[in-house]
Amino acid sequence: MQTVPFTASTSAFYTLTLTVSGTSIQGFVDGVLRVQGTDTSLTAGKVGFYATGVATYDDVRVTSP
Image (cartoon, rainbow, N blue to C red; front, side, top):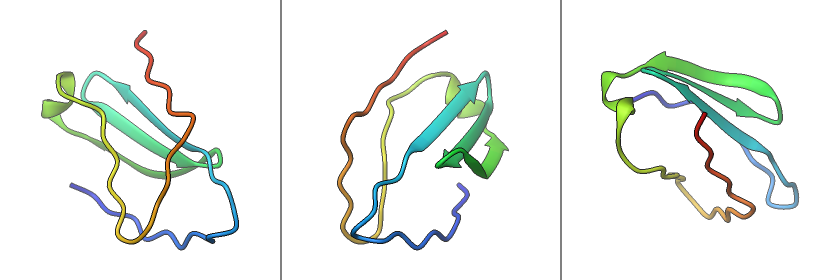
């Protein structure tokens, strides 16, 4: 598991994009690459989000190639 510190403003909206291709994953905030890595367990499972503190997610879309 990787973590990346990110200070979010409670009065702002952010676009989070996660791209998974095979065992590779990239995470973007507002189009800026913030984290990337590989994990062999990414070939199956459920999508989820985790935040420490208060967070609200809306307009979530999951697609497959």
